[in-house]
Image 1 (tube, rainbow, N blue to C red):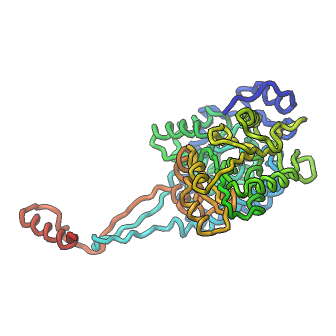
Image 2 (image 1 turned 135 degrees about the vertical axis):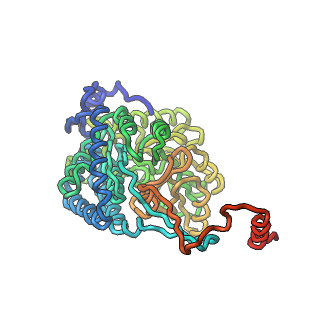
Length: 514
């Protein structure tokens, strides 16, 4: 990711370019540059102390019956529901997203996921019998034991939903959680912590540590039992290496470069609506954003015309200033500069800017919703994660060509297919190299807690959400016990040739050669 620009003259950029104190994080509104607050940085000693406090609380919490844990987590959910308006406003100010996106893309998925897992935790974490096909005199089952302290290193694009869901799932599984929010957006998670404490949850069960990369490294080194990281691929590699040295299980949700394949028979009106929202929601700062479109030549011009018409109607501005806004500010000045550079290089390489293509003049970190055509596969705009409000479009001659180009990427988090033919849609989806593929829709599976959130290739390791994601918050232990009380098993000592011949005869009886 490129360094932040020092040449811009906007107040927000000037504030962002100023050196920050080493002991504090300075938080400014991305839409205006206004100071929102300062947060003390936790050094390594403070991180260790908070992990120790979380561990002490977890030892007691782990013995709390699961039904009681679920009841209390639902109490926390109730406080979130009552505080939804205030939390949406906090996200609007600190993160730059619109209030509708704060509600629909952060608060609602968080509240629904907490509800889903709390109501099903007893069933999902109940011991699971394992039928044994051969050793009928014995039984086996799996049981799920809390890991201990789960470290959550979160990202700035969804500063509430990602860490809140993980913390709640960790608590349901009997763990404590220590959350390190992004240094770009630390304030909203402090408010979530206040609501956690107010709900009656054990206060020490959720800890917040603030800081930059050194704080995240200190968290991994502080004796946690599991790490869940959301962020860039480069940082994810370092987190994975640090966890590997300590044999700590880690879940990595890293970058995305989601392709959309638009077939010749696609419903163009639905497709255009989906692509515009999928590219520009949260100012394109979604790991599942539509980042490249491969559209069949026969419908290319018509689809581009519809996309342009819809994009021109988008209203961009400060969500907190009043009035209706569709596209808010970009959260981080450095990311905006990265987008500027990618678009400039694409234009220099022959891409055509149909709309947008520049930072919006005036105050704030705004990049205009941008539509590019005549894109080529070897352009950075088609290969590197954009993470901004840019929609690059490439014309293809066939669905097979589109599929080949879509799979030509080191990233594989989400993918999308648009077609009226349901069977063909599923066939293409199954061949797309991505952790999740949606047909005739975009983004939405993060809001379905039943489904796994996981990437292939360099988009990550492990999974979050889903029933298995909750079980992954536990150690899975196997118990094998006797059904029949036998004096000895036939393969125990003493050995003899007679035992060998009898065993060989039984082997051939059980597994007759074909």
